[in-house]
Image (cartoon, rainbow, N blue to C red; front, side, top):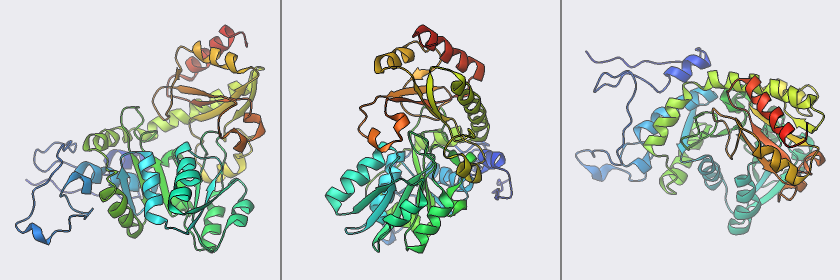
Length: 398
């Protein structure tokens, strides 16, 4: 008997869709999980001369797209509330692919002053210096400053909320209105929130960008990126940035991220709960100079965050009343928390950003003496808190 094809609409909850969308019974083996297809080529039709070799919609060559990529795209589009999704090799591949496909010489981009470092490099250095794209960096937490930066040739307003690394919050709805009134489109980097906590497409954004490497994969063992939006827009990105620039995801990474994404809702609940408890604990410590977490009621972004986020995520930034070396000494005493880059892993990670960071002048003054970007994992909250406290005591700070 031929297995039936199952459909899982958006009337179903996010936990159900995280398990089922993109998965089905394998028609060849009857396996209830779709297999990893480690092929770089697919059988051609009788007359291959009818094919468009740059077609991103057919299984020709894995650079044009593969089965595991397609299944993952179905799931991510569903989780994000978007019409379509293109998955690429990394979060940076998604960002650069979006900018490459949508911008031309003479276009103007407004972008957040608090963003992932690759966005700062791409828009503040590469696209304007090499390709003649005009760029303006603004404090996107203030919609009036976004409005003031708009020009007749503005094509994109790119924001990231919560912003990396300070967790600055921007109002997606208001900025979408501003962009659209001026004929521009709004991409939102949603990596710090994940679709469990925030869905920018549903708030008016034209594109949502995710580093799948982070929360959606969730286990620190695969890389990928995604752009979610309208199919007509994403088809351009597929053709230009996937097929002709070659930023394709490997079948293995697509399969790994598909596997990891099943538990996204369960993991995000734990990240949210742990981060809130730990943020409150950090605020209670006399050696902590500040805590930035949008779930705290006194956080500058709280009022906006609570209108567009269902949970506040697992990222915290905080400072210590200590010098540079003492901050590094604190990190060296941590036993459960690891000093490492990236985020969204199952384990807690931390990195110290010193006062000489090249973008420090863009951040609020409370960050200027150096601060920690803390990625709260899914360990027991009391164990994470105990690790922080013992490290502070060992460094002579508590």
